[in-house]
Image 1 (tube, helix red, strand yellow):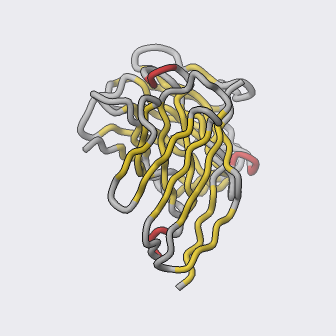
Image 2 (cartoon, chains in turn green, orange; image 1 turned 120 degrees about the horizontal axis):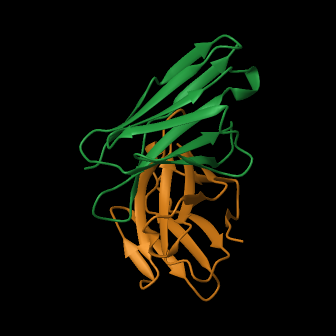
Length: 115
Length: 115
């Protein structure tokens, strides 16, 4: 089945630094990937749609200069949280469209803590 | 606009009983729905999906019912087990047929299974 690998699973960084999160489709090619953010006891909020070979599409209210998305290959999308602040602390999850059907596979998530 | 919501934030059931988790949607054109299970600290895991040309779909211990008249779907879990304890989300793609759509998630229902 379709597998999406997300790394790292946990990261702690200092305020002002940048953090990169990777999302890989292991056994299929994904032209489109999605990045979500989830606060405790809340639902998943879509941040942006990552498109291979072109610019990401950001949802309203999401700062594109703050959350840099790169989708340089058919199996890898990265989310970089730039100049992180404590309010950026959250659970970030990526997903990719499954090939051949209408399903979506999710990564295991990244817990970001900014101190 | 589109929205996907859940009726109850928390459902507590006795081990062995059946669980029913409900979800309402607002877009009558929606034609594809997915149920996800999310355990603490993990990404959403696909449970079952249903297209609008069906009223019912069964999986292993799970059944999804779709009532297009009242725009409501439910997830039924038979003989609920402790391992079923998680947050359950209904979700739908934003575009018809789910071809390119972003997933919209409901707010989630926390299922607690009492031993």
